[in-house]
Length: 139
Image 1: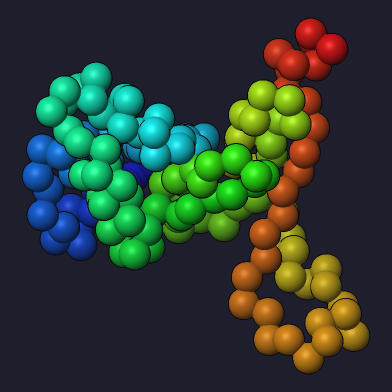
Image 2: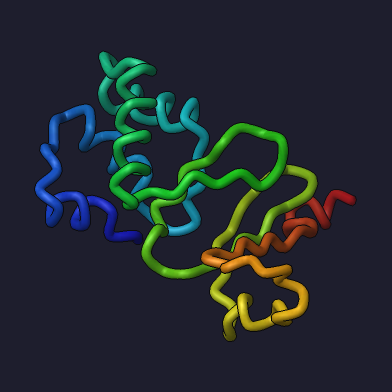
């Protein structure tokens, strides 16, 4: 499980019923839901929650740095509560399943100085692609 709820409480974030249910839906490992998926799951717990509230809440969590927007392809943005532990993503090219992977080493160190073209690099995103076991079995 991620510690999203605990992190939000520690920041003094006002925990309304709507905010709580959005945070609960996102809390966990390997969670990479779209805003529509968050809304559908949140509405299952709190039927009166609006789509706008979900979008606004996700935006606030991103602004706080407690949730990261992830785009691994041309599909919708996904929201990752694993914002404080460096990780890469492993994505199934067929079904779109995403898993967090924690590789050893610093991916920034793999970029030679002469390939930085004068950039001051502040972030690295690595996405591994392949087929998940379910899709590979059906291939």
